[in-house]
Length: 331
Image 1 (cartoon, rainbow, N blue to C red):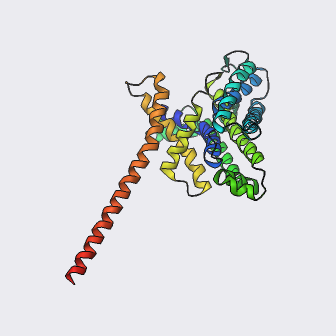
Image 2 (tube, one colour):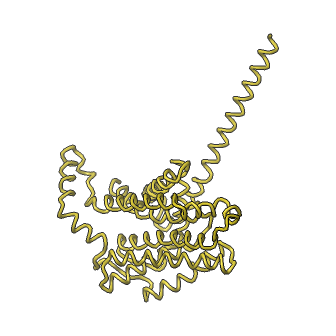
Image 3 (cartoon, rainbow, N blue to C red):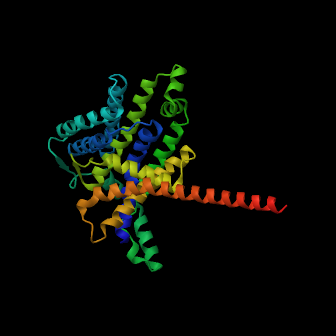
C-alpha cells in the first residue's frame, strides 16, 4: 500500500507541471484549450526520439518544452488570427498533433527502458551521495522498514523542480506581461481599451501553457520508460481534475495560493486513483471512469456544501428575525 502511495506522489509531482499549464489556460486565460491532449504526447515524443538518438536527456527535455511552446502558439494563432472558436482551435491542433507525433516517433511507441534518461542520471548522482542508505537505516531504526521506498531521488528532485516552476510562474504572473495576460482572461474588453495587443497576449499565454504540458510529457515518458501516441488521451481532464480538487481543498484567494492548490490537487488526484485501483471491483481499464467520477465529485460536492451553508445562514437569520420580533412584541 505504501509503495503504491509513494509512487502516486512521484507521478503526482510530475503531472503537477502539466496541471500548472492547464491552470494557466483554463483559469488565467479562461481558454478551454484541448491542445493539451496532443502537446503532452509531443513533449514525450520529442524527448524520447532525441534520447534514442543519443542526445543528452536534459537537453532533450528542454527541446520538448520549446516544441510545446510552439504548439500552443499555433493554437493561439488559429484562434486570434483565424477567428476560430477557442474550443475548436484546440480540437483542430490536437488532431493535427496526433499525426505530427506519429511522424516524430516514426511508430506508435518508442521504448526508453534501455536508454539513459533524466531519472537514471539523477539516480546515479543520488546514489553517490548516500542519502537513500541513510534514510533507510533511519526508517529501520524506528521500526518502519516496510515503509522504505527504493529511492527518494525522484520525489526530492521533482519536488525541487515543481517548486522552482511554481516560483517562476508566480513571479511571471506578477510582471507587467503576466498581469496583462491575467487581464485578458478577466476582462478582455477592458484590456483592449488600453490599446494592449490581446492577440499576442493570448498566443504567449497558450504557448507557455503548452510548454509546461509538453515538459511534463517529456518527464512522464522518461519516468514510465516509453512514449506512446495514445498516452495523452484525457490529459485535459486530469489537469482539470487537479485544478478543481486543489481549489476545493486549498482555495484561490491569491496566485501563490492557487498554484499551491494545483500542485496539491495533482498529488491528491494520483493518490485517489491509486487507492481506487486497489479496490477489487475496479480494473486498469476503468481509469477514465474513475477520473470522470473524481471530476464530477470535485465539481458537485463543493456546490452541495455551499448550498447547505446558505440554508444554515438563512435559517439563522429567520431565527434571529423571529427572536427580535418576539422581543419587540413583549416590550
